[in-house]
Length: 164
Image (cartoon, rainbow, N blue to C red; front, side, top):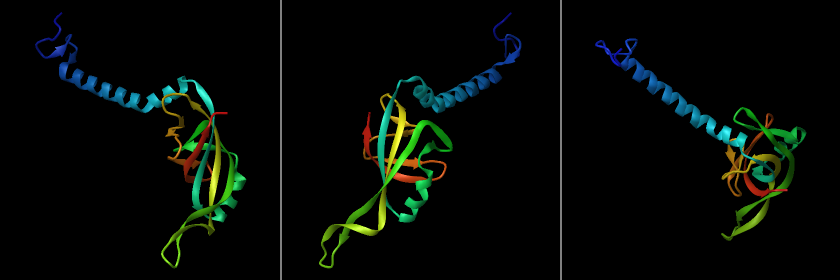
């Protein structure tokens, strides 16, 4: 039996062009799947470590603080997926301070009487790899982080990461 017959079919059964097209489609699907699932597989197989993190949401209203108190503790979400072993365990209300201009043109640091800061405490088990992640979000001090549960979502900046 010939490898390619006179009609261009592999082993007399499959057209060579169809086979190559099918092979390209399979490789594209495998590449996309690897790209999507590689972080999840890496996170599931790497060793974990406990982390306590604080993140500050600045210049929020007092009403927001009152409404989220009933929903603490809460499990964190990434997108629409609950993150295993990651919880908002507390929230502290702090006065919001910012720079304001005075009548003589100077800027001074002052407490805003109408705004507050929310300092979230987050406890999680994270993969101990090159990059620390909670779900799909990388965690590093001074970067933005979405503190999101089924009942609230705030953009916050990470202030501390502690390994208890």
